[in-house]
Length: 318
Image (cartoon, rainbow, N blue to C red; front, top):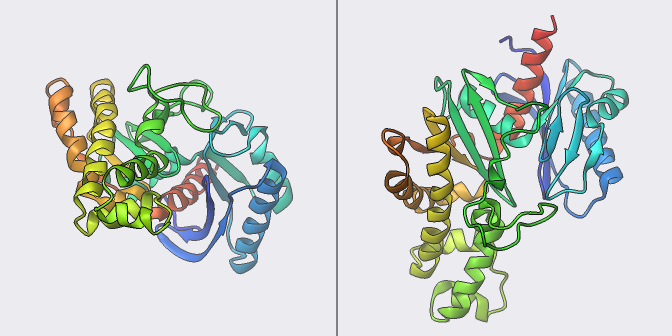
């Protein structure tokens, strides 16, 4: 793969991150909020940010979009998103027409997995599963060194694997109940943290709650890393739920590794150790020995992977 400059876009449930990259080197970067916008506003945001990247780095040759939606690769559509108002949007062609560059599209979990495979925790691991934990839970699969997309491009929605059949309704536009996203996402972490704060008023979380502070995922993470037993207990719960899902992924794919990324991975082993314990207990041998690794590219994985996707697909087209 050459080191041509490409634009990588990671559109999330609450933010958009755009960078111009040569390989893994970021040459220009921008971050903006994406919360509370309708579909037309999101398109305008995409176009505006990509054009800003082009203006800053006019030698960029292509754009890669990582979108948190089911994707139709043939039509270049964002078919449906759980945490953003996207529905049957021909985003590839719309953005390409507005910015004047070739545009390549994939699910945000797929491009994050691609980045970790090329440059991060799963480098040289040609079969890997990626789970990204943020507002929701994204998934990505690399099989034989290639992104697995399913029949039309919508596959590997790992956050919507059910781990509790009679569990709570999933969030956003997902019609299901008991999805791992509903039970182990950053949103779920905040919800369980609030419940724990109310039941343990003398804990650090309880004191935050009494002061009127918002108990969100970051607050739970900070309290757990500072040693608050109640917050650590919340991570035991969330990590165990994640581990139930990972045991299933291990059984199905027998990957070289399962890589966990997204904002919640800042908790490190407080999240991963309970997940590893569940995999050891639940998965079949030898899959119960599947390594569960922390992503190493942090919040940049989606942006890096989207840029790499654009570079690779442009080369394939010749």
